[in-house]
Amino acid sequence: MEATSSVAVLPKTGLAGLIENWRYDVLSGFLVFLIALPLCLGISMASGFPPQAGIITAIIGGLIVSRINGSFVTITGPAAGLIVVILEAVQELGEGNALLGYRLTLAAIVVASIFQVLMGMAKAGKMSAFFPASAVHGMLAAIGIIIMSKQIHVMLGVKPNAQTLFQTIGAIPASLKDLNPEVAIIGFSGLGILILWSLLKVRSLKMIPAPLIVVLVGMALAQYFDLDDEHIYLFMPENVFLPHHEFTIGPKFLVTLPQNFFQGFNFPDFSLIGHAVFWKHVVTISLVGTLETLLSAAAVDKLDVYKRTSDLNRDVAAVGIGNIICGLVGGLPMIAEIVRSSANVTNGARTSWANFFHGLFLLIFVALFPKLIHEIPLSSLAALLVFTGFRLASPKEFAKTLKIGWDQLGVFVITIIGVLATDLLIGVAIGIFTEFALHFSRSINRGDAFKLEKTIIETEPGHFLVKLSGAAFFGNYLKLKSELDKIPLGKNITIDCSDISSIDHTVIDNLHHFCRDYWSKGGEAKMEGLDKHKAISQHPLSARKLAR
Image (tube, rainbow, N blue to C red; front, side, top):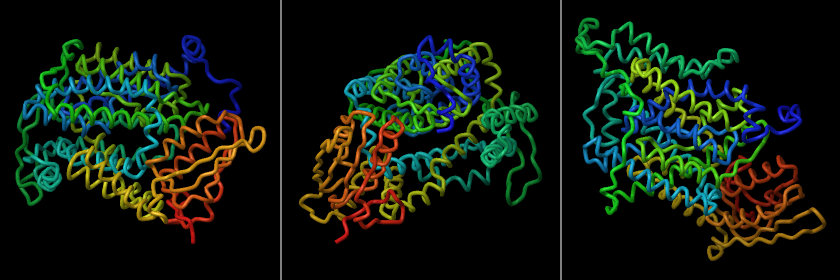
């Protein structure tokens, strides 16, 4: 609140906002560009796309999507959360032919993005409120595990002989044993820097983007080890830890980009549009991309020092338009990206022009300095992704979920297992079904397990009472949200939950955020009556059941 009170008015938007705030937005855009460059390259290669594809996406996200979206400080671009979705599409559609899989996946991106635009026009911005929170977090944790299991081999300079995900995970000990020492030194150096930077308390050092340090150190080590020239080197005598002491190193461990930026453009192949497997990936790309965009954009709004609220429907449509363009020219799909967006806020961005400048700096850099990008080691980029994957699936995520309640930990873990054992859509569906079963088991009256009655009355001018009864769970929250959104801003709202028989974590969490957001917009909102319920845990947002 202190940050907002020191500013008399909100930043202007459009050209007026550019004139007023360009100094802040150019600086933040440049700093975000330094973070985005290595991440775009790493995410693209981990997705089975050419390295330049990720940069193409970030450029389109910055130069085009920033001009038409409904957010203020969000950065759009490729994200780790879509790596698994895209890689699976490339492998399954291409059936072993990487280039064909890439072009067929571009076609799936184009079609999926058309659905994204339609969802935005149909006001699907509220869709994120439907999915159980623990199932969504379980999906993200599973994505983190998959990213780590695949990228750790790249970080070690080893290509495992594995066909399935579980074989890839099982091959990690063998890759540690057969690692390429010089490549591994680059990778572990990058990982060490990222860990150190996450523990730093010195604000002046924290302002330097850790990914930039990782890339610069990796490039220096690559020069020291002469990765530009393929050669064989000896590393220590043979021993139990390294049974081999002769290793090959060369340019294949560096990023490869075309000399001409426009040579990196590729075009979609729609030849499988009549096949079910094509539409499976269209649905996955569309749903996962839209859900991640909504969740990230909503999270970034909470970081905005001016407490502005994004138009999520417009955001989804704008990202869809950007993704259509990306699919047509060879880029990855984009989402509203939380890590780069939080850095954007931290660096003092005021308007969406910061996103524009981040894309502009990327375009200038890849157009003028492609040879410099070629000097970046793949192992450094893999270290960035291993660290990103760990953050998605860290022990803290498990502990945080357990605090909410054993039921939410169960949904979280079952979703992870479901995703790892099947795929994203089926895994999330398993998590949703698990949450559904838990809600049904908590219900006092099984016949009314899915009915939520709501009455909204204005008890006196400016004071609204929202009376709830029945069972509140993620499946019927959207109708309640629609009714709450109709209440004018600046009023006094009381949400009476005393007659609710059971209420799940997702609904309590969403109502909590509704009250907080309503306060930030100048009104007053509170929940009452939950003290009559028995909670699953001591956490204030845990699921509850009416005490009898």
